[in-house]
Length: 117
Image (tube, rainbow, N blue to C red):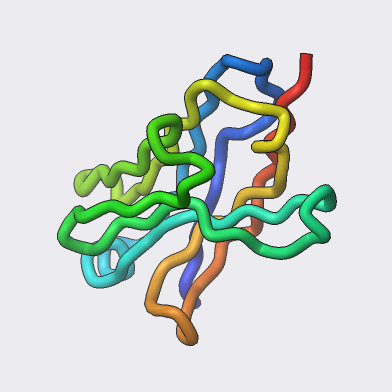
């Protein structure tokens, strides 16, 4: 059974930083694109794609986070990170890690990020 184990998140202040981690097996990590979605009640609970990284390390970002968030991969740890800087209250959401192509994805359990002063 494929597992994606998320950690990080919690409470951040506007303008501050948080880092999310998503660990998985070596096989899944090396052969799949990975990334992050988020889901917020303020957005009608629609799941919004945030950032992605191909198995080769190419990255893409949603316009809403471009320049503030950075996705990276640690090959030795089979872990994907989402470094979130310049946090805004509208970044408040549950963040979900994923692996695999659209239509055949594995998902993490979700981690809450709350941005508030």
